[in-house]
Length: 133
Image 1 (tube, helix red, strand yellow):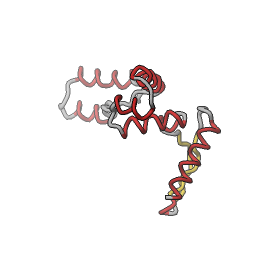
Image 2 (tube, helix red, strand yellow):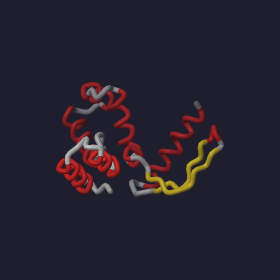
Image 3 (cartoon, one colour):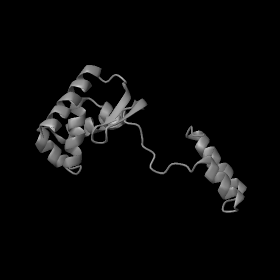
């Protein structure tokens, strides 16, 4: 439990120090497996939120999205909760839950006759619009 509290304090301190600035992690260590990975890793979107917004999002998830419960927890009105949710949501990028298939897969399906040339072109153009290669 003490380790979890220390980790939370460390994370809050890092969030305070960076003040919303973009940071890149260059080394990750898996303590239990004694493995270190080096490279360039961006933090997930939720980790880039301020400490206060992270607490707010955590409370929202733990309350199963109940704005009524959020009103009680934070002692504020419905419009205040909605305004904060909208501000936080506006700062997050949409996460694609149905990504376009890889180009190789599209071409394989075309070759195998599973899709028409028009469907393949449409799927390839869709990938292009999303900035995928």
